[in-house]
Image (cartoon, rainbow, N blue to C red; front, side, top):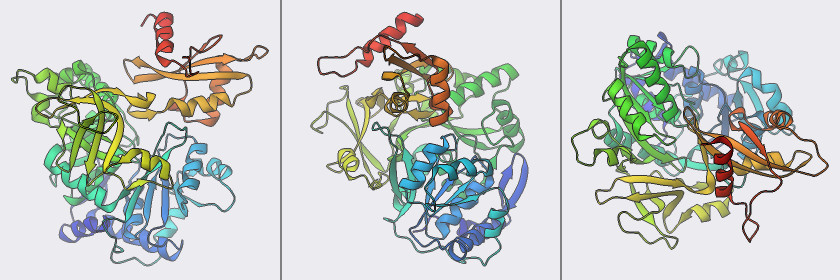
Length: 511
C-alpha cells in the first residue's frame, strides 16, 4: 500500500484540521496539505516524467516543503532519497549519482556547488524554495496515489559504511508500515491535537516519524529557525501544547540545561523520544527529575528504522523496581514487530548476560543495500540482520548496549565512520598514515580525533588539514584535533591498534 494513502484519508475525513506550521503560524490545514501533495505528484509526472519506482532525492534543510515533497514523491509512486543536509556537496553528489536519482530537490544556496560536483546531465536539480518549486504546483493534480505493493521500495536511506562510502538502505512500504504500527504499540500514542516538532534532521528519524502523525491527523511544526534551539523549543512547546519530538541525547541534555536555567519543567512537551546515540544514565535520571515523565527511548538502525527495542515512559520514570537503574541504562525490550538475538560469531544464541552481536529479524528489516550485493550478504544472514552492535540481554529481555563494532563514532546523534575521514586525510599531499578515533565529550557525546604520520620531507600542520577536510567532508565529521606521531601503533599483521591510540589520547589530554 502506498504510504501517501494515509494523508489522503486524513484529509478526506478531517479536511479542516490544522496540519502545517512554521513556529506557531499555521500555513495549511489537511485539505491544503493534501492538495499541494497532489499537485506536486502531478507535476512530477507531467513536467519531470517521473514514473513509479523512479528515485527522487531531497537534499534540503528542515522546512514544510520537505513534507510536501516527501508525500508528493510517494503519491506519484516514486522512491524518496532523503540526504542529510549537513553533508558536504561532494558527499551528496555521490549519493545522488549512486542512487540513480532522476531529480533532486535542494536548497537554492546549494544548487551551484552540487551541480559542479555532478556529471553533466546526471540529475536535474530543482530549488525547493523558489519559482522552480512553484512551477510544480501549476499543472494538474494527480487524484489518487499510485498503487504500490508492500515489497516496493519507498525510502532509500544512505547510511555511512566502514568502506568509506555510504550504503543505500532499501526500505519498502511494508518496512515503514511496520515501523508506524509498532510505534503505537511499543513507543507512544499519537492524538489529533499533538504537534510533531521537527528540530532534528527530517532526512532521518525525526522525518520518518511524520507518518504516525499524518495517520492521526496531528500537527506538523518546523521551528522558525529550521533547526534545534533549546530556548525556541521550550517557548514553542509552551504555546503549542502537546508537543512530540525526536531528539538525540545531546539535544535532550541541552533542553534540560535550558529548562533548569529558566526554571521550567518543559510545559507543553508531551513526549521526547530519544535515540541515535548513547544516553548516559545520570543524564536521563536528571532529565526525568527536571521535566518529569515525558521520555521514551528507541534503539534502531537505518537497516531496521526506529524499530529494534523501546523503553517506554513508565519504565524510564519508574524508581520503585529493584533493578530500575539497570533497566534505565538499557535500550529496552524488543519491539512488537521484531525478534532480537545476542549471538556469537556462528550466529547461535548466547545465554542471558553474555555479550555478543545484536541480531534482528522482522517486518521492518530492510530489503538490502542498493546495488551492493556483497554488503547485503554480509549483513543479512540466515534471515537475521547482523547489526554490528554488541550487547547483552537479561532474563527479562532488556537489551544493554556494550560496545559499537566497526569503530563508529556517534557525535551529536550522527554516525561518523573513521574510515571515511581517514581516506580523505590520506589524499592530502604529505600525509603518510592517518587513523581516526572518538573521544568522549560532555556535550556532543563524542568528537573526532585524528592521528597523523607525515612524510619525512613534508610540512603539514593542523590548519591546512582542517581546511582540506572542510573542502571535502561535512563540517560535523572533520576532526576536532590532530595529533602528529612518528608512527602509528600496529599489531603483527600491520593493523593499526586503535586501543593504543586511545591510550595515547588519554596520556596527552589526561582524560
